[in-house]
Image (cartoon, rainbow, N blue to C red):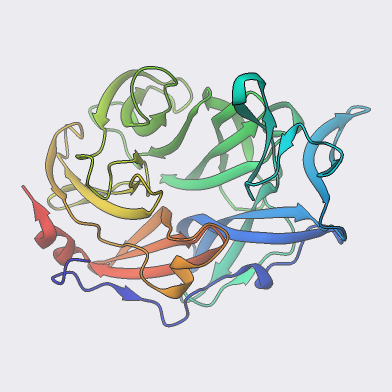
Length: 362
């Protein structure tokens, strides 16, 4: 970490951990609560938390997979069971996914081992949170049979637009809902087809158009890079432009890059916190300063991470050496970054915006 940057991790970290969250069913366990969107609503801090749950098992050879299925016209969670000794056509080595072994030694993901939904956590001070017992957004079978992940919140006027990754056997897409009260919401459907995620919608129009960063994943040519798209209505997106694809092979962002937090406007331009991984899947955060009227124009960026996994709770967990943000707040000159740590808990780190600017190379 660059010594010039003073990162203040909350003394309450981790703010929320799996043991703080009530499972949605008695036969489920909470594997992780992480990668939250954040906003201020009335006098509260609101976190929309990704809660990942798996099915409890008593036998170590048993694997149970939760999916959302439509049966008799109603969505319900269906449990699919496997036995490691009997169902040998699968690779069980990945804690996150069940892989089907193919011919010639190849494999593909057959299922995810957990099912995620979105739950609300509320706080008066931004550090002490109360977590709802029930899901705010549940996955639906038609578009989200393998769960919903990594919500991001963009406030436009009095409406809060929430995009998240919607996962099915057909891939990882991005869906959009909106709410005015965090009690109910309206679904707007899939806005980016698979595989595309890490969508971060700007909180106001630029030159008469809504803008968003997104991260398509090419399978043959190219890499998972950040792109910028525009829309007249937040639903129909196009005119994609390649924005950023990481640095050289030895850099902290040489593996893959993604949207991170929703951008916010400062007196110098748009500040964009992004996430990236190196070749070893070590996830860190960096920042761009973008032109107010042309966000494709990078005015400055941090060559070193502004936040990287250093604390024990960031290094150890479901998937270690990860700091991953879906949202931040800018208050009183402080960028308050809420982030997932090691893919199983929620934390906060505060950085003075002037310190971020000072770290940037123009």
